[in-house]
Length: 379
Image (cartoon, rainbow, N blue to C red; front, side):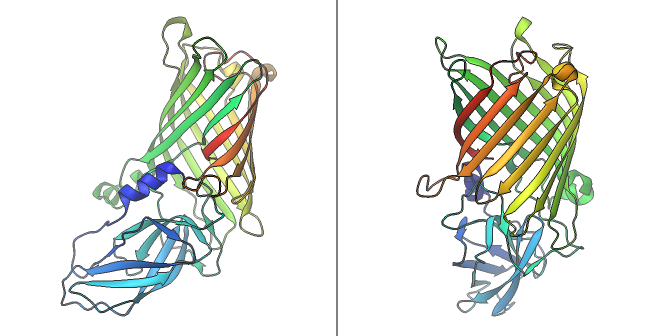
């Protein structure tokens, strides 16, 4: 994954455990693993050295909603309450993954699986006949801190040199295994989100920022269960969002909305190619700074996507208001190989924008169509 998730992996590397008789704790000193290469882990019997650990242990690799059985083989004799095990990480499992024992022990390890030629910022890849997704098992939650919308830095020069960049993340407010979620399971999907988008006027004197949009949000997100081996994936989200440009007086712009959105994807024959739809609708709760903004932004947008996890990805976002006002944004990205950026997952990113509302300040103005090129770390 891109840089922030690497830091997350380093800081969050598991021991999530509960005290209790006979529970086994899983740990590893690794945050990354190479697909197709051996991985060594340690298992600790919490009941003490008297409890013998077997020569083999059944385990699971979980990525998204999919699971793969693996067998841990002991590499030496048990030392006290600890025994070392080894297994070969499946070559076809790539991305942020969770390794856990199959005996329902609460301990789990968070690992980033990579291989040469695979850009770490791409969607997780799972291609195997051994994937199981039992209907009675809950899906594995993503890390508490994760990406939200695309993150990029782009440059363009139509009507003056300008840059557009965006940062975005989301944070799950309650721990999946915590006491609060155990008491109120519905809170498991509650998130705080934050997205910041800036337009930087590089051709004007002192290179000022033309405008910046700040979008904190509070929302509930959940994945819709699918049958095992399904090519469909669907996630739903609903919540509240505030957007403002942080200015005062006549240049102040802000809105509050309630929104609902869906993200549907369908995997094509090889499992790496996919198509998708992402509709989003909203209602305005407050817009006194810009009472006619609905004429330009409307009440919804439609996102379209098509591409490959290991290649080109095209995304289109369509937004329409009244009397034909609105905007069209097209994003096209391709992964940079490790020979270019060996330490990060990055993509060459091209973006086209045409219409009103590229910034919140001039939401009712249509500037020249903008074509920009740059780098993204999340697409």
